[in-house]
Image (cartoon, rainbow, N blue to C red):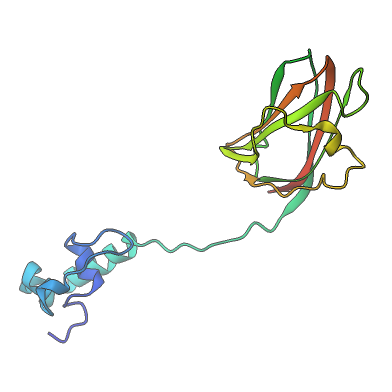
Length: 186
């Protein structure tokens, strides 16, 4: 029994189906001879069986390597123009089709109360993750003007199959314009 393939190792546990892929229970409860007791003497003496076991182990646990996305470019998405009447709400949806992270937002509006006072941004969702809390009043578009202090944001990364939903409420009859800037990976 000096053969390293015989015993209560993870290879035999996987072979006899007592272990799920990636870890879990082993056959140590059967003692040092666990695999031998289950598979018999054929396992101990057959080179073909040893080859089969080695191939099975290699196929059951594929080698993977983590790689980072190292190519990124600046990218932007327009939000509008979108017009609405007083009291209405609209959602602007964009689908980047690549990894995209919003890092800056600028918005304005054109209406009777002056730039930035006619619309409010009430909610932003990336995929299913809320980026700005959903409120009834929202934040005036004025807070995202090109000269606003805090229009730089670091929102979650939008995955290729997901979308960015941007909800705007109209305080007066007006037109909303916006732009998202960020990094896209390729």
